[in-house]
Image (cartoon, rainbow, N blue to C red; front, side, top):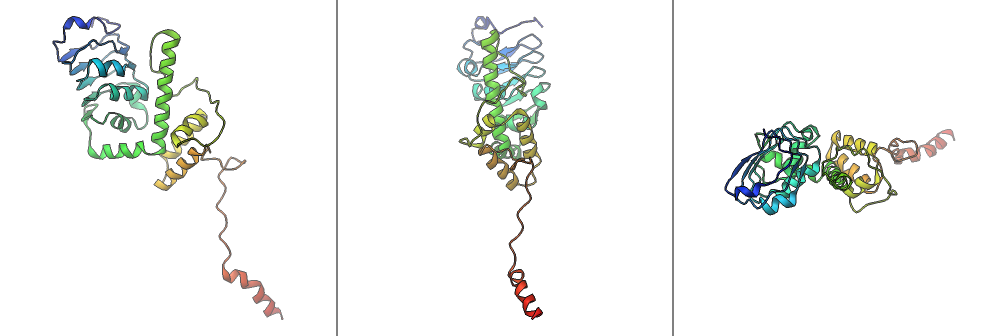
Amino acid sequence: SLAIPAIEHLAVSRDQFDTMDLSNNHLQRLDNFPKMERLATLYLGGNEISYVDARNLKKNVPNLNTVIMTGNGVKGWNVLSDLGEGCPKLEYLSLVGNPITRRQHYRLYTIHKIPTLKVLDFQKVKQSERERAQRLAASAAGAAMEADCRLEARAAASSAADDGAVTSKSYNGDNETNTFEPGEGKNAEESFATQFTLEEKAQIREMVANAASAEEIDRIENLVKKGIFPGKTDNSGSIPPPPPPPPSEDQDNEPSKRQKTDS
């Protein structure tokens, strides 16, 4: 380890290497690469990376195939999105030991955002996982994760403006405020991002995770799109019971039968 705090001066390599080992340093950002079209493998384990510059990677390191980021500081969905955008040929990725791996649906979301992956965290990506990732992306839970991704990306940009260092904010968005009026958005994803508090978002995610059927997930998604919290449909804060069934024909004729009997 050379205790390198930032990626710099790599132009002196004159793009002569296809593999580079920057493990066990103090890197916090994956950026500032010069033109290195031969570079295909990066070893970055044991750093503090929490930010990825997708534009820099895509422009200057377009042939990255393998990225090993074991034991770093990746927390936000936006980092996965940036890796997918910045590394269009990425097939092997390890994020073992990063905080993001503890988030629900981490593996499926990563497979969805980086469709070129063949091996994630040293485990082969299966076709069944790709199919599940597609279903997740099309669900209300997927919409919620995409909304969180955008919020985390904005938080990272805001951090850069505030202190000059771009970092991934925690996914729980402690400083987020909801200043939008209730109402139907263009889709469930937009409504989820703008119409609900942090506590309500957490409850919606739990409802989706515990849904017993696809119909129940659709019901939740439709309510979210309308800006309605799925667990509240009246002023009492609870879901009202279903209306009673309409009276049968025999029940309608019961009074007349009694009148005939009395007479």
